[in-house]
Image (cartoon, rainbow, N blue to C red; front, side):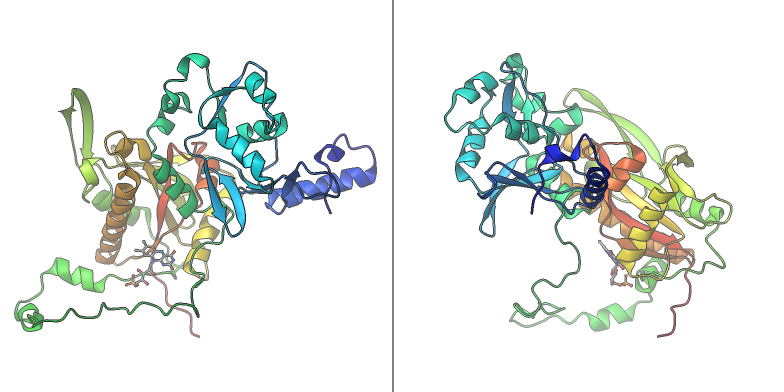
Length: 422
Ligand SMILES: Cc1cc2nc3c(=O)[nH]c(=O)nc-3n(C[C@H](O)[C@H](O)[C@H](O)COP(=O)(O)O)c2cc1C
């Protein structure tokens, strides 16, 4: 059974207030769907599915002179038997029951004035346009900028994103979509798993085993063998600030700086100990510190240029949510002593590289993860890479929008503890 949105406010009776509180609480957990159009006894025209926990539908008011156009990040696709309109920028997706409305929205592939839209037979309604505008699936454009749609949408950081890159980022990290995610074994029972080692190609093989064993192994190669993931930490003897400083010095500190003239523009570079596509070095380290001897619990940015930690003010609940998220991802009995969030300044790479920017950033993140593993192993510490992170939580903690800078992975660090029996 549904309730009209208008019935929630103003709250006149105790019952109405109670319902309002309940609905707000359900909405805060993304547990509500919102229906648009369709009389009481008919199917709704559109169903709005929240994608972020605190989505609440807002209808942006529109004037007849406003010019609207679809965002270049919006896309319409089949999901099961449904037609859905979504965008990595949107707090909700729109499921179309009335296909004519979807066609009408598609007309906004080119800028249209509201006055002109309202005259159309299958006008999508001001309410739907206002809701789509609020979700950034549509945007308003100044008439003089109609020839430069990409530049007219959002800030310069958004201009740098390619469509598939932003979609990949928002859809493969946590916090900005409502889909199941992670090790769900969705295909088990339907498709057999691929073998751990690829079946051999036919032909006569060249055996390398004796050759590898013939020489003694250099220490750095031994490090590769010794490296492993640690998910349980010894909280009686937490990592000390000196050890943390050495790990950061070895893995992430800026080692040298230079600038070069790239296509007539002077670009600064700052090299670190790991390789980076185009020497871009877009990755930043943010530390969620739970237990570290000599360093207060809190959230810090590692300033790689000056080799220092700068505290960032966050709420205790946010820090707890960050650490618990990592604990859950590792299936660990407790939070990591230090949780390194690997964040990217996306525009640093996308300014130069088209179509491959996000892929390069993920490759950089993998290289940095291995560098952190090796440093931890060398120092007798423990670590574990974590593939996901909550980009919405990070945005709230740093107050930086998700398309400007955000997490692409995490690394748990600390002094290894003994695995629990059983
Ligand atoms: C990109 C990446 C993501 C990972 N994500 C997780 C994770 O979310 N949770 C976890 O417990 N381990 C994670 N790991 C660690 C792997 O599970 C681990 O490397 C693998 O099981 C091999 O074990 P070893 O590292 O001890 O050799 C990740 C590793 C990588 C490289």
